[in-house]
Length: 207
Image 1 (cartoon, rainbow, N blue to C red):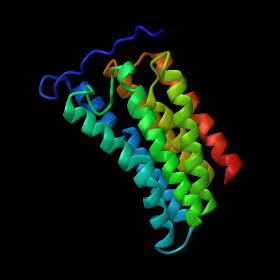
Image 2 (image 1 turned 45 degrees about the vertical axis):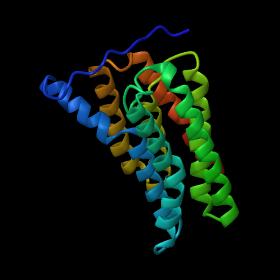
Image 3 (image 1 turned 90 degrees about the vertical axis):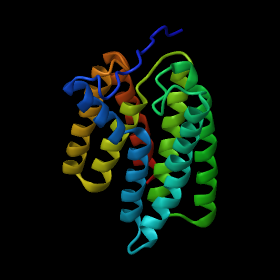
Image 4 (image 1 turned 135 degrees about the vertical axis):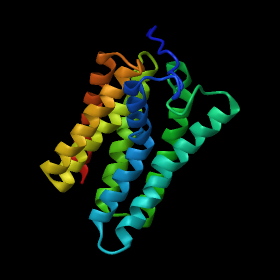
C-alpha cells in the first residue's frame, strides 16, 4: 500500500516564482481541461461544419464537465482537499463516479450514431480511467500526466507529428509542475505518462 503523502501546496502569495509557474501549469493543463479540449478538437476533425464540434461537446459533457463538476462539489462540501485531489484515498470515489459518467456518455453517443473517432476516443478515455483507478487503489499515480501523455499521442495520430510534439512539450511541463509542487514522485509522473499510452493505443485500434 502506498504511503506517499503529498504536502499542501503553498498559497499563491507565499509561493516562489517557480512554484507560482508550476501552479499555473497544473491548473491550466489540468486533466478535465485537456479532456474537454481534446474531445472538441477530435470532434471537429471527425465531421465538417458544426456537427463535429457538437459531437465533441456532447462527449466532453460526460467525460470532462460532469466529472470535474462532481469534484468541485466534493471540494465545496469539504469531502475533498482540492480540485486536484492530492490525497490518494480520496480519489477512488470521484474516479468511480467519473467512470459512470463516461459509461453513460458512451452509451448515448453510440445510440445517437456519433462519429467513429469520437466514440473511439471516449472508449480510450474509459480504458484510461479504469486503468488509473486500478492503480490508484494501491498506489498514487499522476493523473495529470496520464491524461497529458494520452493527449499528446492522440493529437499526433489525428493531426500529425508536429501536433504531438507540441503536446508532448506540454506533458513535460505538466510533469515538471507536479514535481515542483511535490504532488508526485518522478516514478509516479513517469508511470502516469506511460499509462496514457494505453489510452492512445486503444484509440489507434478503434478509430
